[in-house]
Image (cartoon, rainbow, N blue to C red; front, side, top):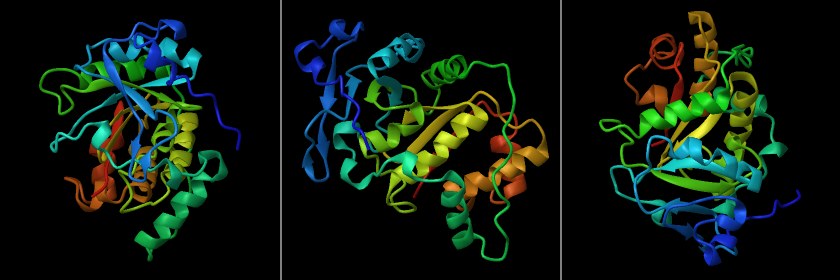
Amino acid sequence: MATLPNPLPALAADPTGRSLGLQLPPGKLVDATIDGTWHEPLLWYADEPASHRAWADLLPARRAGLHPLLVHGGHRKEWPEDWELSPDSASYPGDHDAEDVLAESWEGLAEEDEWPGLAGPMTSSADPDKEAAEVASILTDEGSWLHGARLALVPARRSADIPAAVGWLGPVNHEGDVARLCAVLRSWEDRFGIRVVALTFDQLVVSVAAPPTTQEEAEAVAAEHFAFCPDNIHQGRHPTLPAYATNQVLDQPAWTFWWD
């Protein structure tokens, strides 16, 4: 696998990012992992809470190979330098097949039911980046569970690869190689126009530009969610797939995942 150039080291000497065509607020670079200091920064994040437009304003950073993200300390007040990151444990998302990943998980969770297969793609005229910017703006609102989130930048090939790029271990109790889940996120990018918008220590939020619009479609996607993140069903407010599909998938502009 070819390694992409990482623009983040330039921020050590140029904290505002002017050399990359950016204008960044004060922030810090994170290179700490569970195995020690990584050989280059894994991400940059701001010192202060993000404004409503912060995510959208940093979309041009993609020209430099950096993807915008919101990060939050969560109820444990653990910011990225305190997260358990392990880039060594993440493979390359492109080496995995999304359906294989989901089918394998499904077979271990729903032994009596046959894997239903991937849901069909949804169509929408919505722009995925504009939808993501709107979701990011809502997440920074006062009263949102992610109020106080800070802006971050991650070097990655595409938005779906962000968790693998930083070696995020949020789903480790379900999946030890987060790149396998990123393969699913890539598939959701292609079929539903998702963007990875926010991460906490153990939660993932994606925006959805083309969500299911019928109950049947929503239930097909809910099956994928169950295989992707069983705790959404097992420990959620909607413990059956039809109820989960109705309340968390159908016409929803964002999907949230949490692994115990």
